[in-house]
Amino acid sequence: MPEYDFAKLFDGKESLTLEELKEALGDAKLADLATGEYVSKGKYDDAMKAAAKKQAELAAKVEELTQAAEEPKSQVEKLAAEIEALKKSHEDATQRATRLEREKAVSAKVSDPKLAKLALIEAEALMDDDTDFEAALAKLIESDPDYTAERETEEPGTRFVTGVPTKGRPSGTPIDEAVKAAEKAAGLSDE
Image (tube, rainbow, N blue to C red; front, side, top):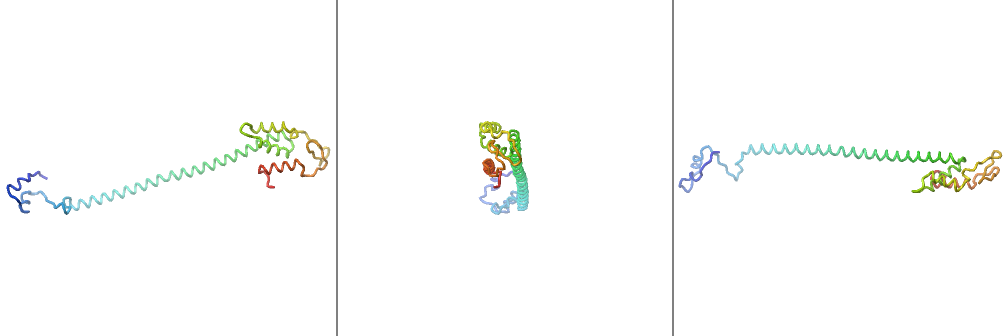
């Protein structure tokens, strides 16, 4: 739009008619600002449509990125659950292996199977932060040599209680009762 010196338009007149003003301005356009015509309605509508389209594209992109961000979270949660399950499985396997190693260590020192079970349970009960299983087993065997005493039977059916033979001793002897009580306390028996 060319620059005008609007003061020259009036050229001493106090007012101009609309025709005089249009003639003085030539090809310049006039718009009533109160109606919003200073920007053509077509250009305004096109700009609003473009803005709405861009806003919809951005909203779709935000939704896409939000979903993409949720997928790794769910994968992380799934993997964390799998890790916990594997940890538990490893812990269980480690406990079983430890139990088998301890049973083997006791069996090497105590020949009677019932006494071996009792020795295992009692040695585990003696364990603490300062005493490992081997030390507890050694302490137990040292304190009660009956665990390792050689037992010879005079004839089939003869059983011993603390090294003294008793012919055909019925079950329910003190050793049997102690083994059953220890197994029950350790959760190894269903009785």
